[in-house]
Length: 274
Image 1: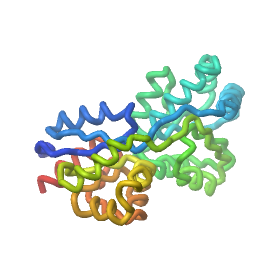
Image 2: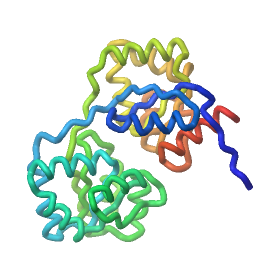
Image 3: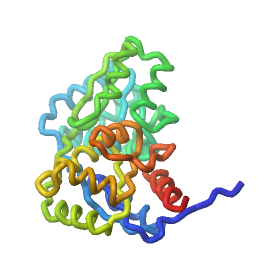
């Protein structure tokens, strides 16, 4: 059976990814016949305190970490950037040979391989829940787990693994701030209201909550919620993102079966062509 391939039919798709990742996403939208609209809701900032990162490198070098979990390419890139600032890249790479490296999905795995790190495990379901379920099946009771990630993160993965008996610590390798771009924020509200934007794609719970925070001076919560629910198609990648949007009172229209950006665009195109 030949699978039908749909296009985005010249419609405008808003992307909430950090600016450094936005261009790749924009190219994917263009390839599918859509127009990208970049409105980053997350600003990636280097970690100020390098002591926890230095401790992580030491633990890895000693072989004290059973699993090291990466949930985004940002976590990979920022860990190596911080490690280079410390001058300990060789120690970090050596440490990775003594732990099981877990990547949440293909993009994160690619970022690790680019840094010459072998990836040992990718879950079938590309989400925090998918990682937890896979590791719990392997039995993590008594295991030591480290998660290099942002300081503004969902506690879902950590909670699930701790309930299964693992010793889990998050290592904050970067900070996720709110972009300070008043002009873009104001234009976004105007363009949604004028129906110049047809869909908004959210890739994380933080991208959803930050949108409301960064636009609060231009649109009260009730107005932004009403605009999202009435003017655009809302796409949520992953159950944690969907849950965050639902909590904000936003109706999710499209949920890809696999939690990949390209799959989200395909699901959006299919939704519009249904």
